Length: 191
Image (cartoon, rainbow, N blue to C red; front, side):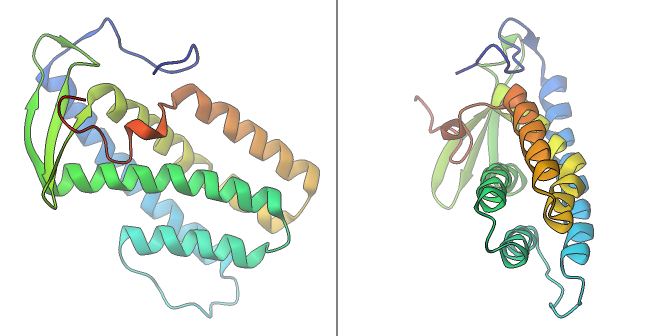
């Protein structure tokens, strides 16, 4: 679960208000991330030949496609883009569950690992812990604030500068990361 660099709230008592604030933050972060992704798409598609994309999932896919198109012969950048894409894609699953499937919650007077939002979407019930929600918010917020640096690494094509950006972003992401297995499907009840 938590590593020494992971932001944790293990002993903090979480209220319903804290849970609501985390949900609000989640949508704020997604709004910021979507806006930044669209700006980056314009930079990566400098010739303007691509059709505009609509929807978060399509924007995310297009971001990844353009990075791969711009640097098909740079395996380090492609690996880095895949890593960042996986975090954003997992966050999108959480976003969709919260946006379209909240069926209940359990909060008041519990610790972060015991506070959760229950979702039911496409016939599947899952619980998203407060801890996973906060960690995802931190990860996505950090990515949103550094998307321009990630694009800069590919557009400037300076190997040493790009390597520094990859290392810096990866090290910072480790501070907030929960195991990806806790985020994609969140957590089925009772597990």
